[in-house]
Structures are given as structure tokens and as C-alpha cells.
Image 1 (tube, rainbow, N blue to C red):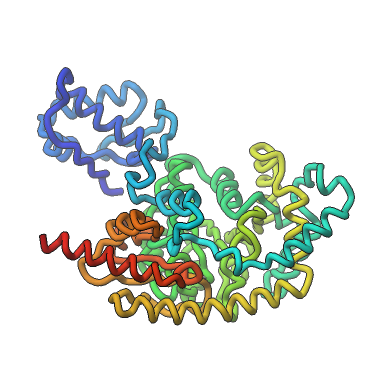
Image 2: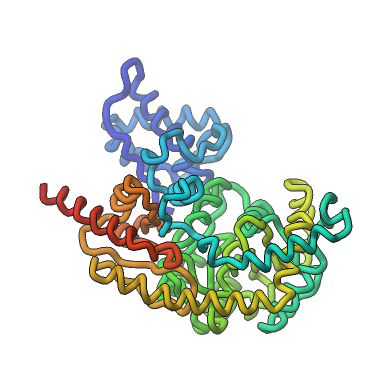
Length: 480
């Protein structure tokens, strides 16, 4: 891989030797996980120039760090991070919400902790009045009349049999044949991905994600100390030439994606791209995780990697937080039977089982009735109207969708030239509007001119007014 750039140039702090300053710069990047196990350090000459020290000073610093077990030399290749002796993982530093760096955690924190009066066009869920409250209330009443074990006991290791049967039936309808031994319920969709990462990966392993991709993919992979590479995303899926090249040269262990109504772009995978992804994955022994959380928002299903592959090297994960309730946490993993068996043990070890019977049976009860189908039909209708309305409101500001999604509640929009989405989000937050700036989704940090809008959360006219005011302030700052 290319050397990691470290730009801590300058003289050492008072009381430090130059060698100690070089060592401190490396330790700082290790503590922040900007250097992770397996990463190559800058060349001696390159780092000497950046730190404004002699090459011999860098040699001595590297030798000392190698003696401590933090890095090691590879003959003819350079120095690499080992992972030994790393300090406890600190994903973020303490700061007030408005002072925090605009990183993959930023939107999550601002959205989850926001006052009820704050507008949240950047959040990733539907408003409460769009959710099937009455169906959920009926489900709770039915559970209240059920036997006491459901209300008080742990569930089985694989989760509610009723919900698993329903999911297997839904898989079969789309052509994915799977048996009960290939399905595991989890506490949430995020926990499903966390379990897969724990099961298949080790610190320093390489993982491919779409660029842009769902920001919490990046946050979770960072917590697992993994090397993350981005594949440019197109309207029909990942850039297949870039995907094939990275799969062949970087030997990643995992590729994580949304194939249906991709987050944040709203794009759908084409059949041709799907086949080439699977062909490249087979050639490079690459496992794929396909997140299906937005599948029910599609008017007609697009190609699915798990269906085409038959759960051989594709793992399907999903949950019901977007369609039913973010409060009732319940997810699932569909995969090879031998992997599911290992994931069952891992979930027992880390959580003593998956979702409790209350959550899983509640979801099963709602899915069983005809109300869920009607709810999704109504959601698709309302969202189609909201996408048109929000796009029309943003157009006079020069904010335009990258594409017109087939469904879902996201618009991935290009901002006017010269407007940085992170700065725009900071100014909007000061006016009690939470936005989702482009670079929180981008591994390469190449999406500064984009913003993701949740159309169901963007209908309030104040959103447009705040955008107009903040953009004017940014332009005025440039002119000044």
C-alpha cells in the first residue's frame, strides 16, 4: 500500500529531543488509529523532510519504536505497524457537540441527541407519524396477553422461530432458497455487522466499502481497527473496474454494501454489475456483506447479490428499524450454515443471545398481518411525493439530486460550486438544523460538495430557509 502521510512537521516541543518528537508523532497517530495494524509508515527520507529532521533521527526513532513492539521492519519494504502495545481505542476526543470534528460519528450524535424541536433532515429514520403505530400497539397488546415466558425469559440462541419462518418465506419469494440453519436473529442490523466483523476479521485486515457509503460502516470498521478502502460508486453500483483492481491487488477479506437503494446515493445495483462483483469476489476469495435494510422501499426488487450467489460467499444482513420501529431493535444474518453456527456461539458469548422474545415476536406479529403490506405501499407513495417536493424546493438554491432514486427516503445532492457541506452543516446546526454532509460518507474525503437529505424529515420550510441563510453566510465569508 502507499505510505501513510503524516504531516506533523516542525520543531520538537520544549524538553523533547528530535528523536522523541518523531516518536511522539507516530504514537499520536497510533492512538488516534490514523495508523492501524498493517499500515506502512512513511519512508525515512519522506518523514525526515516532513518533520524537518535528519534521516538518522528518523532511523533512531523507528528503531526505538520497533524495540517497543509498536512497529516492525520488513526487509526491502519499510516499517509497518504491528498493533502490539497500542493504547486503548479512543474513537473520539471529548468536545462539545458543536466543536466536534465532522466525522462518521458527527451526524449520529447530532441526530440522536437532538432536542425534539431541532429539525433533522440529515438523520436516517422516518418521522414517528410515518410509522405503523396502531399495528405496533396491537402487537404489544397481544404480547401482554401471552404466556409469561415471552415477557420474562431469554430467547433461544437463534431467535424467535416465528420470525425466522417468516423471513425464510420472504427470501423464498425472491428466489433465495435458505434453510433454518442459515438464519440467525440479532439485536439489530448494526449488531449483525459487528458479529460478522468479529467472526471473520482481525485487526489490520482490509475491507472494501462503497465511496460514498453509510457512515456507520466506517465507524464500526474503525472500532475493529481495520484497514478501509473505498470503491467509487456509480448510478449502477460500484465502479467495477476499480472494484476488480482493488480486489486483485489489495486482497481484501470483506466487501460491505447496500445493493438495493444504496445509502446515501439511492442508487440500485444493475444485473451486469452484480455478476461482475460476484465473479471478482470468487476469483479473489472475497466475502460480501449485503445490507438489505432498505429493500422493502423498492417498488420492484433490483438484483440481489445474496440471491444470485445463494449465500455461498455473500452474507445478508438486515433489520426493521427503517420500516417498523427504531425503538424495537431486531436484526438478522443469513449465511452459510457453518458460519451461522459459529455466529450463534459468538452472539451468546458477547450478548447471551439475540433479540428478546418481546422484540422478535412483536415484529413477527406485525409482519404476519396484512397491515404491513398496506403500510409499505403507503410509505412508498408518500416518499415518492416527498422526493419530488423536496427536490423542487432545493432546486432554486442550486442544490440538485445526483440521481432520481427508484424509492427510499434519501436524496444525494450536489451543492453549488464553492459550498463546502461540512461548513454548511456547522452553520445549520447553530440554527437547530442537523444536516448530513458528504464527507462523513466518503472514505476518500472526496464528497465535500455533496449533502444527503432525508426527504421525510425535510418538508418543513425552515430547512430551506436555514440552507439559504447558511449558504449566503458562506459566500459572504469567501468574498470577505
